[in-house]
Image (cartoon, rainbow, N blue to C red; front, side, top):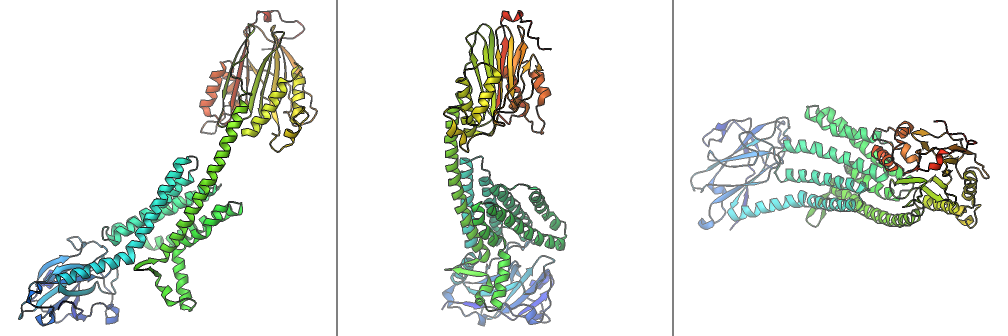
Length: 637
């Protein structure tokens, strides 16, 4: 007959430590008696810390486990929680837990299987168990939970059963959750690689990895791979890293502004573990609870505010996140409702079962949160992909339109040398320019910038370019007046377009006609004045196109000389901004205004481009310019 004998005692018990206490000849009759499996308080003992010894003398009559062929017996020693034990049989150490070494450390303790020498019929066996827990930990239960004797096969079955129970009780649910979060982290990286400008996917992946890290540390501790001391340090940081990364994810996900409060909280929680490491445990406990409350309120507020602004995904995530963030509070609420008999008493255990697998309310709430996260992120990815497809189609259409606005080649003759440079910032902007030769050898130039971006700006700029090309007059002031009418829908065939909501509010424009003898007639509608040989041409002010109906523009005449260089440009040059927030400005623009068009454009781009850059350079090469009309005053240089 096989079986297992429970050796519950009573055992002789003594607090403290002395190597001689393992000696089988030691007189322990003065020691106190305890029964295993019961708390020390129930047996009339005060709590203690550090070492304690248990001794039990086993008589052969107690070990009736089979015949002579049953083989040598073994002991199964089960420590309590993180207690560390060393087992001695007749004064010889036969086994110990992982942390019970020369410099003992706390580990989660699994049962240990140790040999029991061949029992003689007339000689008892002395079993002594040395136990230890780290100083500062009050021991109220006793660190020796259970001792059993049995055959090798029966003890092996008991060990396997204990390990299986621990996996079902703690490890499997946590491991499954960690793998789920790892899968969502991989999904987040894939989505981020597909949409690099949406960094919320990257932060979602990092948030999930923070959960995986926390779960991995917890699992390693439960499996006895990490000492309690190391686990405590790692657990301090992993939990706070999760908070900081989650706040960053929510900030990116909701596109929240005014992030100073969130940044302060992130710095605070990352520094918080240092308070515990320097020994201020009470202060840390208070600050830790405060941080968890602030974390929950902050993230909930960000999601709620985004939901109120019409961001539906934030509303979907709000309740699951609140459940996950308040899992500990949920346990307290379940306790209260069970005490009031509003729920069954089984809810007070905070542990639930899915078949043999046990899981906690924290695992349940995190699973709900993860499910909502997957649904929301996939929905967001699909929606963003569709929006980007529409946007790309719009940009492609706008680029085809803008091909008419930015000439790739400029007309040339023996009187003028023209050069242009166009550097778009991204997508399609509203810059446009046209250069039109006139039959008398003069050159008509128009440069402008329509407010807005994308297809809307390109369509309105194309309207102005089309109106310019169809313009019968070559007088700059008259041309600007007609273009102003077009902006208000007075042009033939443009009424429907200009009444639509896609029409830009206004456009700046500068128009000039330069004759081969150097005479220049110019009018300006709110655009940057051109530069002549490094100096700005002074023009009378004029309102942009589309501001006042029926606007008339003042035209001014200048006399240019052979060798003069005239530079027209858009505000993308002046408004270029470096990383320090400093504008390129008018002074720098003037300094480079006598350079070639491409040089000016590239200089502004390198400084810090944030708008489309357009530069047109006109060099007057005509010899006729030496014979200026005396009635036209030369521009004062």
